[in-house]
Every structure is written in structure tokens, then in C-alpha cells.
Length: 309
Image 1 (cartoon, rainbow, N blue to C red):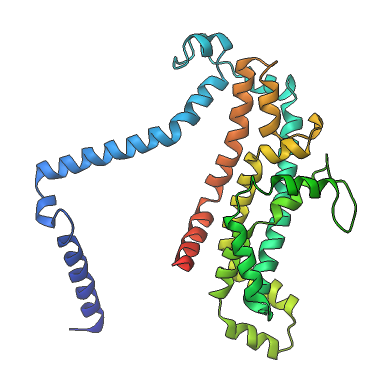
Image 2 (cartoon, rainbow, N blue to C red):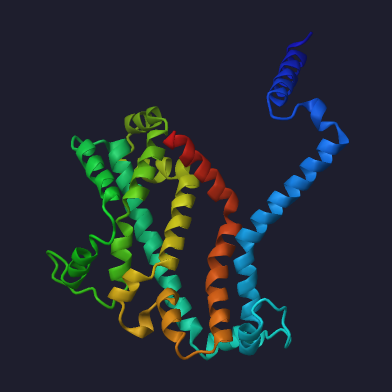
């Protein structure tokens, strides 16, 4: 027996052993009744999960292209008065949805940039540079995760009103949203765990070749950490996209408010159909973003879970 056939035999035996240790053995699965029952059960479970997860989004789409009378009279009816595609255009123009969408995108992009900058540089400093006081800083960063955000809301608001050492009032500027969202302890710690798993012998060899901390960070650490960077990026953008309370406090000017703040305010004057159309557009963008980068997100999330273990 060759080495290749021996390894194939061992894999087959291991698979058979694993199947025998499951609830249903291979012999049970061959029976027609069991096979049909398992198929029906799988269809039922998958269908229920799809209905629970995609049902609200599908209903929102149905309402977004329905008239106000149809939404109020028959919420689950399939377009008694026909599909109203014009609601999407009217939501963009009549309630100035494009302006609020632009504010949301700008806030999300700024939060992503500064959040990623703080997370990567903070994790790099604690994991690779390893200063003498690194353990103390890590403990302090970890301690902030146990502080509810509501407790620090007043102090953070007062800080935005008068930034220490600078004396600048950031109220009604996007900086008031960008800077607090960048200080995310979870992102810093998860980056640190990722950097801890990288081969530090490679960094030592780069130092011997004359590479400085910045070159190691830019040309070694970041290229090897793209999956977890993708995960942190997506989480940061989604968090900034749906944030409501903090933008409501620091952006009182209606022309600078994001969708999460503007839509509840517009609900008092706008038609129900236009509100549903605006809500659908605001929801479908992060969903499309996830579907576009789902492979990178799931791969990075799997690596993050392995690091936690």
C-alpha cells in the first residue's frame, strides 16, 4: 500500500467513524423514510430562518413601492393599487433624502478612517512595539469595555463642547462624531490579538535589515492583517450608519444630520409611503455592502474567533 492510498484510507475511516458517532448512522440515513424526513426538516429549518431574517426587509421593500393607502389599509397585501416605483424617486427629491444620505456616507467614511487608524496603530504599539507600560495601557483599554456608554455620555458631550488643550467647540461639526467613534477599545484589542498571532521573527529580521517601525507597520503588519482589517472596517461603518443618539446630540443643525436622525423627524410631515421608501434605501445600502464583502468578512471573523480561543 502506497503512502497516498494509506492517507486516503485513513481519511475515509475517520469520516466513517465521525458519521457513526452522530445521531443518525450511515445505515439510518439510507432508509427512505429517514432520508425524506431529514430533507423536509432541513427545508423547514432553512425556510424559517430565511423568513425571520429576510422577512422584515422584504416587507419594507413591499411598503416602499406601495401607496400610503395600501400600507395603512392592507399592510401585507401585495400591491392592491399597483407597484409605485415613483416613491423611490420622490423620497430622494421631495424629502431631500439625498442630502441626508450624503451626510450619512460622510460620517461613515470619516468614522471608518479614524477608527481604523486608531485601531491599527494602537494594536501595533501594544503588540509589536511593546512599550514598558504596555500592560497598563492594555488593562486601561480593557476596563473601558465594562463602562456603559450612557455613563460617559455627559462627560463626552462636555468634552466636545470645549476640547481640552485646544479650546475648540466641535458642536455641529462632523469631527464631533468622528473622533469619539474612533476611540473604540474593542477594535484596538482585537487588532492587538491579531498582531500577536503574526510571526514576530519576521519583524526582528526586518529590524536587522534596517527597517524602522513605520516600514514594518506599513509593509509587513498591514498586508498580513487584511482579513481582520476588513472585519473592523465593516463593523465600524455599520455602527456609524445606524448610530442615532450621539449624532442627535452633537449635530442639532438639520442640514448636517444623518439618515438615522433625519428620518424620525421627517416622519411628522412626510407621507408614509415616502418614509418607507427612504427607510428601504437607507437599509439596503449596508446590506449590499455586507453581501459584497461577505467572504472577506466571514474569513476575517473566523480568524478573530480563532484568536479569541
